[in-house]
Image 1 (cartoon, one colour):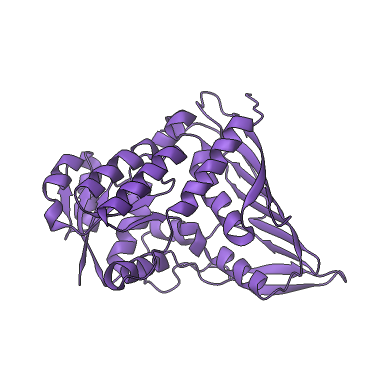
Image 2 (cartoon, rainbow, N blue to C red):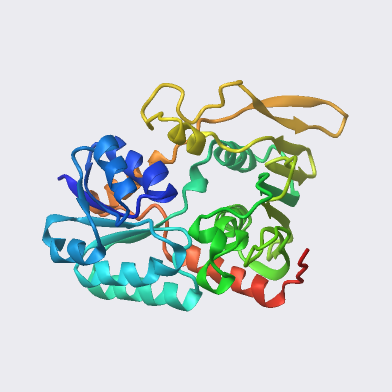
Length: 346
């Protein structure tokens, strides 16, 4: 079976992530890309000459019988409405994170998919970052003992507001850094340490003209007692460690962002040699109570595994790679963070 796939949107989500990953998985074919931008349409024809270019979602729905799967990679506020249209046309759906702008919308989409009998999953690709895979395996082996604190940061230096939709949109339309990076960082924390009973947030706006938060912090107290502290910022001249995890027997530290996104932007494809591996050969580190340390080799990142697991779900009835209920629960935590967050505007 060939899974005929249409990708809606050819911004970062469609161009950097979904289109290359769909082409790299042998059971999928990139059959169409939806974009109304002439420049992006030209880029599709250059990079993916076998894909049809459709100017709008109406044209996609009219040709629904030609496709098996729709990937929604458009702006955040369109995720739920477009997913509902695709589900209504009988198509399986992947939604780029966040699954919707509100948990209520997310539940509507999940209920519609169940009622229609179609497959629905959400692209939480950071579950397959190399540093996260490394940390998860280390925790499963119990090498840090009992974990007390999980610190996770996704930070960069962009002191001026860009022109991306997510930079210009207000928070109630899915704009701001909490809706951009929070779905990843919170999802990773919940995947590792389970349900959350308390949420604290500091949602700050630092850049002139920014309509929403761009320098935010979220603290989660998990039911099991672990405290997760999550930083996300567009105004960090020097980033914190990507992960710092404190346990009773050691501290795990890793530096720098997973390289898959930058590799894709540079023109590498997911099956190319070295894709998902840091060029400098860096390792993570475990610091031990006796003052010593040891290197921990980083696993290669593998966002492609999402589509491999999705292929198993679509062709063999296996579980979807990301159950939609997981990112809906993350949205509920984001909504709690927004409702309770302290704010500063510079």
